[in-house]
Amino acid sequence: MVEQMSDGVKLRVRQASKIYPTASGDLLAIDRCDLDVRAGEIVSIVGPSGSGKTTLLWTMSGLHSLSSGEVQLDGKPITAPSRDIGMVFQDANLLPWRNVQANIAFPFEIMGQQPDKAWIAQLMHRVGLEGFENRMPRELSGGMQQRVALVRALSFKPSVLLMDEPFGALDAFTREEMNHLVEEIYLDTRTTILLITHSIEEAIFLADRVIVMSARPGRIASEHLVPFARPRSMEIMSTKEVFDLTNIIKKEIVGDQKSMAGRPRSTARAAG
Image 1 (cartoon, rainbow, N blue to C red):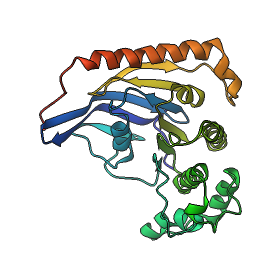
Image 2 (spheres, rainbow, N blue to C red; image 1 turned 90 degrees about the vertical axis):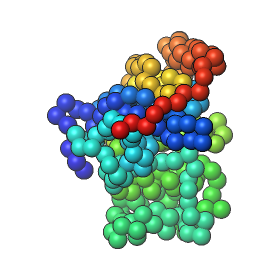
Image 3 (cartoon, rainbow, N blue to C red; image 1 turned 180 degrees about the vertical axis):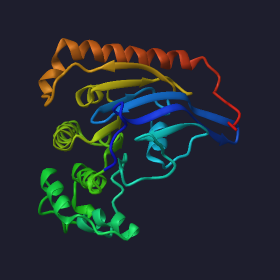
Image 4 (cartoon, one colour; image 1 turned 60 degrees about the vertical axis):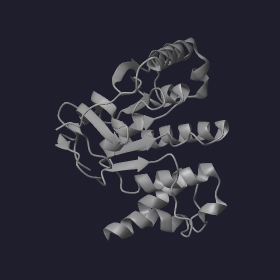
């Protein structure tokens, strides 16, 4: 793995803007976003629907280019996907004709590399999928499919894990299980994690910091520190500290949505 920058910043976003051309004009999705994510930190991003959270995450992964600005990993610009950045999407995106083991191996096949079978076996054991290597995706529940996706993302031993609303389609109990699992893997690996979620409670439970994005065009509106040591139990979610923090973040998001209702649709000329 590449060593982090001397100031401890693993991911650095500077003046990041993204414009999408549409039939009715250019759409400014994110506007001059600045964000630092320190090595070994978990950061959650929340905000109104359409605030550019996923756009920002995808630019960090190298899957989308920016219209202006820059994203850096260890001080170097991100211009393409990197094996040092793992990503878990909203859907598990498993190939239905391949079993679990073959799905995890697929990215290695594309790159012509050999997977670390011992590491993958360790991950499979860690996420509770040991013995399911030969199962097909249709034989797995939604939660189990996302566990496979998590193993696949971590199979390269990335120093950064990006997660785009990965548990949104799961039932409440399974989602809680997955939150605990992510924290357990984090405590084992200290992988830097950035999570997009619509659940304020999930954001608080998992993160060291919660970033709130404004309504479109998405900007970094506020930042909140989460004052709980790890490992965390679900009991903290019933504390006054979490209740107050949840309400503060909720008011910021709801207030921004109300102010957005009276605004015209955002347009912008493409950046040079």
